[in-house]
Image (cartoon, rainbow over all chains, first blue to last red; front, top):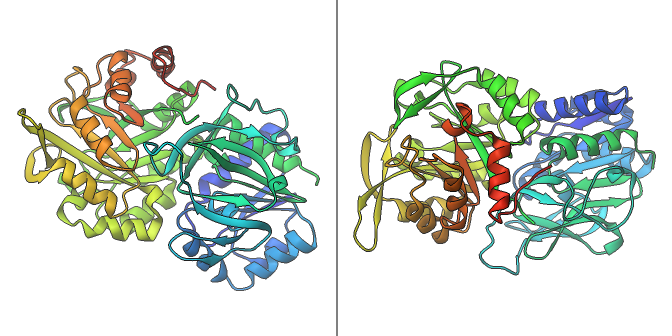
Length: 216
Length: 256
């Protein structure tokens, strides 16, 4: 099985690759993890991961700057139904629009906007940075066998903007930061995490392992 | 609920871990990658590498150490020391750092903070503030010092904190140069004054001698995270002991 981590100039993907390789070993999945900017390789891969750090508009611009990549992604994920995982801004790019600095169109795979987090408690710091719990809203293979909820394991977040899906059914897990904040979205063969599974130690490696075995 | 982060700091020189007492008398104490792995296994919430001598010995930061650590530890990693240019930051991020801390370069050229934040995003730009108390009166005053605490700048620390946040710093690492290495606790008034003045998380640093110091940094200093080196590195306390102590004091901690 080939897993394509899409390289579009957004941050370090070497450590993400290492995390996926370790998760594959620990979960017993034979997977070749490839970091690539080649649209043909994305079309041929069995699973696709879209990472992303920085600002929404920069990431969108970066993705558009790779010739043929958005088309390849759309074919692989939307037409061929390959399992897809967006991470952080990679997850936010699944939305209809990003509102960071200016309005930027997303891929519109999950209807909704990516807007600034506004905690009810004004003393809470922005960015939302650090480890927080996940509160599942449904069952899903991606979060199987991971202890979640208030006393469960934590995931590592670092973000100031968050995706609020128009359809609440697209929200697989929330976190709490002065109010509910979307932590995982899932719809059909697509999923996305606002947190960084590749930086989330136990929880992260388990979730990546689950993604590698997911048969939507 | 968001957890308070415990961040062991590895001061690195020539590829080895050292910890200075008030930035002098460096004591060699280990391999940074092995230390990072041990902290990862012990439940550290993040790691920080500071190439403490880079600024005045004109050395680059330890890209190889960063890369080997990032390959082995699946937790957030901040790297600082001698970061002067956008290219320095890019190299560190490509080696596997999640955040890069800027110190002297931000003091000498404030626009660098904005350039870095615009290029890589606020979330990965930490500004490290080394401050010394210059007035104990009311209100207390602190001033920015550079080059390991040797050079005064005349810049008010709280004004500076506000300014770098407005330019795009996503986090502040605040070190009391009076307290660093003394094991007498954080400069709580400094931490609280800066934390209350800015919208971004503050990491408290400099002076931890006991586990109660860590609690005070958060409860009284309003820090979002606590950084310590010696107490962990010389085995005085483990990260797990620190987190258990902080949890017992009522702070939200990640005990996964």
